[in-house]
Length: 171
Image (cartoon, rainbow, N blue to C red):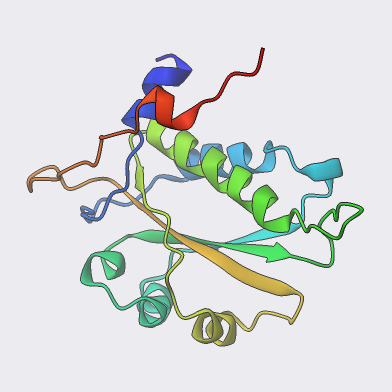
């Protein structure tokens, strides 16, 4: 499929089947993350892949939603603000670099038929403690991955703003 079709197909999945993700698909997704561009190519991030059920159960305490606990795999996207590029006025681009890498993750997963969801509203301190993260690493997003359970209805939020609301042209 072409890129626009892929981008339109990607959506937040909150209903996972119990089918495991094969290592070939996971490696493909991780390669997509690795290929993501970052400011000055600093790559100020680390991605923690959690597959063990008991670890996923612990991680689910950071975001207590039933659907989240059912994902067979979760990737925790962490940013290192000490390694990120900072613009002359001090603007830190770490969060932007992490977001680009996570977007690569979600699109690669979509291409493989694997659902994802960005989770940013989680208990950051609990997550940090559970993963025993050093002070320099901030957990920025939890990305559960899994095959969508298509036996249940999934209402997608496909409504997009009009072009006139999103774009300005200066000529």
